[in-house]
Amino acid sequence: MTVVFDADFTSTRQWIAGRSSAYPRMGPTNRSDHKLDYLSREYCPGGVFAARRRRAGGLWTCNLLTTEGSPEGFQLRTGDVLSATVTLPVELGAWPAIWTWRDGGNEVDVFEYHPDNPDLLEISNHVRGGFRYWHGGSAGIGPGATFGLRVVLGAHSVDWYVEEELVYADLHGVGPAWHAYLIVNLSVADGIYHDRPPLDGPDRLSWVCHSLRVER
Image 1 (cartoon, helix red, strand yellow):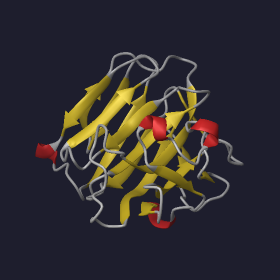
Image 2 (tube, one colour; image 1 turned 90 degrees about the vertical axis):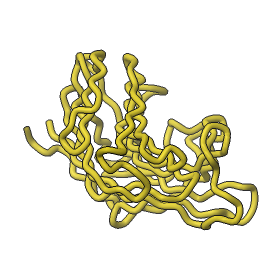
Image 3 (cartoon, one colour; image 1 turned 120 degrees about the horizontal axis):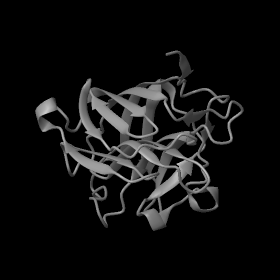
Image 4 (cartoon, one colour; image 1 turned 30 degrees about the vertical axis):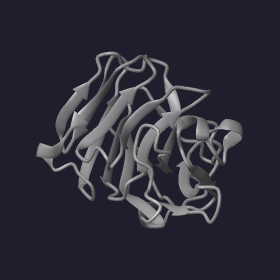
């Protein structure tokens, strides 16, 4: 296979910052999805995705990068293999994710994470169904952990690996003609399903996507 996408989180050709059709009216907020986000137009040097508490309104200025609408307009396709190395956040309320989106759907969640469930990775295929809440405590998953992910986007099965261990094969896949844009972001939970940041807690949350590559 050949590397067809190697993320540079400062590239204005690869990415658009702070605007996505996954958010109502392209953003900057998405309260209906239980997020306290107010999207930032900043890029993310070193792959550091951050959220900063705003002075009023209870919202947080959050980083989101997407290939949708970028000059290169990269899309994942059936058969691609996505690999990433990430460091998880430690702060309550942080909600990091790598996922896909196009035309109001086509969503595959490479991972989502919430520190209030410290050893749990959420992985899901919203295209044809299938998800797993994977408890990875024995593999070292927890706040501040650094590890590698690999997702094989097959027509008949999407397979997730953590440090080369197969943790879930959905046996549904994305179909032969699937394609979608990439999103990498940090949201902030509003407290409905996951803890929101405490009022006396830190004013900055963050996680790191050290690398992200796609092979085809």
